[in-house]
Every structure is written in C-alpha cells, then in structure tokens.
Amino acid sequence: MGKYTSNILQIYNTLSGKKEVFKPISEGAIGMYVCGPTVYSNVHLGNVRTFMSFDMIFRYFKHLDYKVRYVRNITDAGHLENDADQGEDRIAKKARLEQIEPMEVVQRYTVDFHTILNTFNFLPPSIEPTATGHIVEQIEIIKSILDKGFAYEANGSIYFDVLKYNEAHHYGILSGRNIEDLIHNTRGLDGQSDKKNPQDFALWKKAEPQHIMRWPSPWSNGFPGWHLECTAMSTKYLGENFDIHGGGMDLKFPHHECEIAQAKAWHNHSPVNYWMHANMLTLNGQKMAKSTGNNILPAEILSGKNDKLTKGFSPSVVRFFMMQAHYRSILDFSNEALLASEKGFLKLMEAVTSLSKIEATEVVNDFDIIKWKSNCYAAMNDDFNTPILIAELFSAVKYINQIKDNKASINNSSLAVLTETMQQFVFDILGLKTAVSNDQNHKLGETIELLIKMRNEARALKDFALSDKIRDELIGIGIQLKDGKDGTTFLLD
Ligand SMILES: [Zn+2]
Image: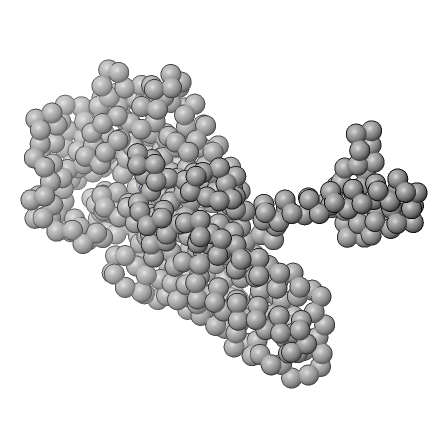
C-alpha cells in the first residue's frame, strides 16, 4: 500500500478557485503536464522558480508512492512575439539576428535549460516532448476542430472561432474573464489580420515568404499556433482527460484558456481536472525584465557576478530560499533575503549532518517525534505548504541542538524516525543537497592552504614529527596532501 492512502492531499485548483481534495483518475497514478520553456534565450530566474515548484510537487507525489507520468514540453516553434498572433516567431527571430539555423538556437538554449535545472538538482520529467516533433498531431487536431465548426480558414491560416465556441461552451472558465469584456477590451482588427474577431486565435499560420520555420499542411506551408502544441502533447501522452496541468501564473490567460477551448472543441469534454499555477518572482520589489536591467540570470547568482549581489550563492541556498515561500505567493529576490536564507540553510544542514553523531539514550523523549512527523505531512498535504514544512523542520533543528548540548535526550526508535523523516523531507522532497556554499568552499580552501604553509615551516625547522602529524590528521578527515615539484596540493575525498 502506498503512502498516498494515508495522506489526503488538498490542492488549490485555479478552475474552481479553491482548495479541493485531490482524487486522481486512476488510483495510485498521476498524469501531470507542465508548460515548458520557449528555448530562444537563457532560462529566466522566474521560470526556474516555476519549474522548481513543480519539481517539488513531482517529488512529493513520488514520495507518496504515486506512479507519476510528468510531461514537460520544450517549445521550439510557434511562439510569436505577442499573444495576438502577430510578430515574428521568437526562435526564428533569434536565428535571423545571429545568422544561425533555428535549430541551433533551440539546441543552445535547450542545453542551457537542462544545465541550469541540473545545477539546481531538478529531477528530469518522464517525457520532454517538443512542438516540432508533434506537427502531424497538431494538424490532425486542427482538421477535427474545423470539422466540428469551431474554426475557420482565412487566406491559408486557420483561426479558432471564440464566439462560436462560447455559444456551446464557456470561454473564460479558467481565467474568470468574461467574453463581453474581452470583446470590449480587445483592440479592433487593424485590417492586416485575417481574423473574423480580434479574440480569435491562430491554430495554424501561413508562413510569410521570409519565415524560415515552415511545414506543409492541407491549408498552406506554415506553422502551428503556440497554444495547440500543449493540447497535442498532453493528449498524446496523458489522454483526453488527465489529472494536473501546471504552469506559471502568466500562462493562465490566454494560453491555458485556449488549451481548454481547443480540447473541448475537439472532444467535447474538459481536458484537465486540476489546474495549478505557480506565482512569479520579483527582484528588489519589481518585476524582472531584461529591458529595464532589473534582471539576474541563474548562472550569475552562483558566480555572484551581478551588481545586485555581494557574493555568489550555492544552488541549494537558492533552492532553499525559493522553498521558503509558498508556490502561489509572489516571492521577492534580493541579496539580503539570500544572505538570510544561507544562514538558515547552513543551520539546517548542520543539524541534519550531526544526526549521525547523536547518541540515543533509553529515556523518555522531550519531543513528540510522531506528532512532529505528522505535522510535516500535514503541511505538504495542505497544497504543498513548504514554508510551514520548513518551520516544522526547524523545530526539529532546535531539538537536535538541545540534544547536542545535553539539554534534551532521545531514545533509539525516535532517533531512527527523526533521521529518516529529516532525510526524506530535506533531500527527497525539498530537493536540497549538502554541498557546502561557495563561501564555505573558499574558506575551507584557505584553511588547508594555511595548514600546508605551517607544515612547510615545520619541515624547514626539521620538526618532522609535527609535519607528519599535520599530514596524517588531514588524511584522517579525508584531505590528502600531495607533494610535487610545484609545491603541495590537496585533494578532498
Ligand atoms: Zn503550454
């Protein structure tokens, strides 16, 4: 029996606007789709936060023994510069500016995306499909939507007929937008567009002669609309109706609203049971944007090479910082906030590592471990409340430190539960790693250099007893000194 049987999960569903008890379609199994990146530039820190939220959710599902199929796509075509189906394809534009192939752009930034996610200790999704790998599926969906009368052809392009759809269904069901307001607030057509109404969206766009990314279709040589790829890939790998669809808050409208409309027009039923949206990340209280310079790249946080930072931070400190906020809250990134998180992270890690050195005594515990463990689960079962979980982990840290100071005691069985639970929540679920911070690495290096210098001084004074003692004691803690032509170097086990 999986742990999921004893853990009732509450998930905030954007569709209903409230927390709901989570019931998967098939017992013990979960299908989850998350909109992936458009690979035309280095991955944005805000995107890292969104994907990290779903990585934590994926980890928790796995911990609860669910069999999870997690699909996160790569958008490598069809994402235009604005949501009104206008402007250039983002990848094609980058390729034109840099005079390289669109697939070189895709390859470069897909590699960057994977490298950054690996650095931050993400688990890979079960399937990572690409839009260009699913053109055939997208064309088939368009044919079906055309047959059902919810789309129309205009000059080689196919548009989704929002007003027609809204007669039979509810356009705005997810975002809460009202069709009258949408009509009222959308700018009129400028005469350049083939759309019947401005709120209609493209399922297929005929490629202009200069457009380099193009595929043949029954209507024109062109490319699919951005919203369609997610409908095609989620249906192909998770079915017409699946459990969870996630993404950043900014995708709620129009992207996810359009996904629902496409799927309902195609199959006449709702594609997704739980819609989950992760909130955004601000920098020093303001929206991050390349254009204003209020921006930090993930790699710059690690190196510290950005004028908004006083130093570099380890990936686990950044991960810990992000996990300290609930995924549905806005999180503000700043140098001070990271410095504070680093302190907290090191305190947590110190307590976790010291657990193996604690000696249990056969006495009464001063801390209710079973109650504490159930509080940890309760936090996660309440819509993945990681800040509450972290507060619980710190009540255990306080207890561990009291035991170390001989101010509290723990018995054998409780120590085993405490150790196992800490390991599971800190490493498996929050995804943290014990790696020392850059700052600590630096200090450790300097300390060893100092010892090497003292050993050299001892040898110069022919005090071989002392020089050997320094070498041997360092070996004892896993640091090997190697004497060579250019002096002494060291190796960490
Ligand atoms: Zn999507």
